[in-house]
Length: 505
Image (cartoon, rainbow, N blue to C red; front, side):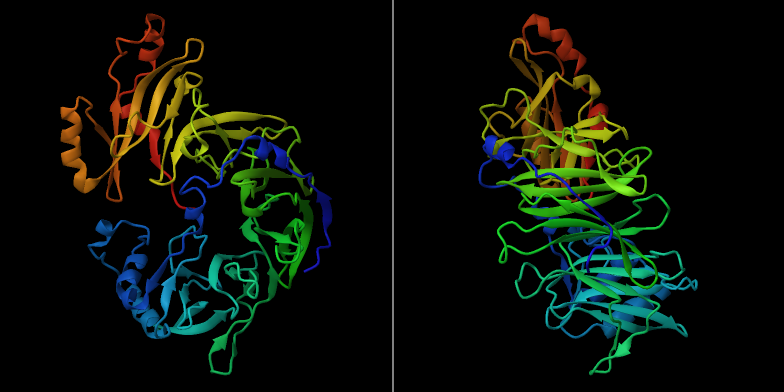
């Protein structure tokens, strides 16, 4: 779809900055791969899993959490049976690659008549992604429409929203070709005001109202009017066609008939790929979009746009995120205030001799003030392998460092140390451990005997998150540092308040 709105070009990121930092050859485990994890469910487990989904549970729950089947209402039981009957043989329920709600079955009132319809995502007998829409008639669930894209290999995105406030939902589907040259990524918009038509097999198929190739897309309220716009990242070519394709960010608005383009911005082309975009409030008073790209061996690049006087504008050019980040980052609303923050990776003090592959980054979260500055919201250590973050107390700022625990004992994850840069003094404040729950009692006793007692901070998904805390300044610590060290000591309750789980995006 040709863009007709205003267009501007954003300057190229400085690739030499990533090269200058000497980035090695493999990214940190768990940072990127977890975003692309695909999950599907065999059809033989339909009844059990639909019961779980109907009760509001997630696929991502630990096996121990799923042993007891939750009770479901008779109405949901009828839906379970209908889905089981209507799914093609050898099919399997599936979640989109980018899933905010871990649901293969979504109940939503599509036409605002007070009765929910069901949208089911699955792989058919040919391992192609499809959607099935069920409606309820005379108390029974019936198939209303089949939604398909024959060239697709995976389901990337699925969002349902009333884009023009006319009382009828629209469906945005991202069909992924999984990197195949003959199966491009296709973004399709379906309106439920259209009626499905029977195909050659006699199945009611709902055709797309709009379709376009895309790299990444999302819905959000950019201009603050309460309606959602569609933001799409596209390219002018592919790696097979051009060494360096042009990339574009286009903002669309659905007017009930077609996608009207509001604005198009040319993005820097000196990147590997654009991986993600976020839409929402970028300051207390302004909405906008954050775009993330990979660059170099495994660095990343972030651009923030704000809606100002009827168009998207890049935040001030002198913002600290103009240079690529040392490693991949995930920006987002870290403190739950409804405003998107930018993540800045900071190398810990006293870590110059640590190889990149073993570096444990400090993540500094910064919030735009809506003008020309950023203020620090939080500093934390994030571990995506074990899905947790530890937010450091403000009293620690400028006086701590992090690293791998000395000797790398079993189940140890990270050590947080007091740090005095002037004297080069370093001493352990706390060490985090993640222990399988079945091994906890034995390991806790072992650590107690070794003189390093552990305190439980949290138990989740079959894992015990624990900490060993310093209870006083070590004798070897120079006397001039003891008062500062002791002021940074944590209680178990304080440490519990610092630890939280990272939720799936």
